Image (cartoon, rainbow, N blue to C red):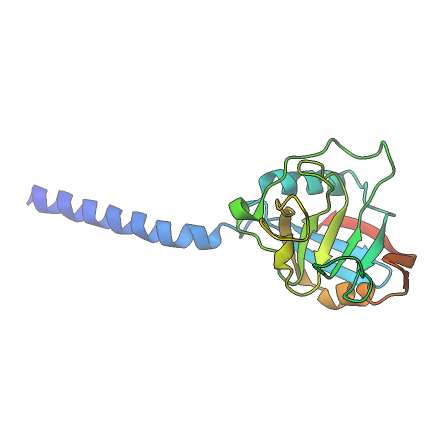
Length: 200
């Protein structure tokens, strides 16, 4: 009798562990921070994938919490028509660039081959020059941009960029900013970022 009861308890515990293994991964992003970007053209709500891209997420949130993005701008729009010298074309808007001396130290590149966060429509990612050089500047993808992922051909080093979140509201604002007047890829005038703050 005691043996049967012990076996029943073990079976229940095993079932609970199996259920947790199925449920917890699906809920892993439930506590990811949400951030609101207020621009002169409207608001953009984003979820930061802190669970999958911890270094890049922490870096972005450090700028947010310090209020360093408040009063910055979206300064760049990349469309299919304004990159004539690029064989591999992309569509993004870029902002959050700070003056020299105002940025935190550069961070390590979290590659999409490791994080699994791809450059799909509405994804936010860090701008960079070489690997491990990203500081404050970020960009949003308009439409899917696989050439910005690891092994993509947009950057000669093939390391891609660190995607770290996605738009959950206000994608129409992102698209509107992309369509603003520009000289080359420089928005004229730039689009003001009123503030970026956590909402959850």
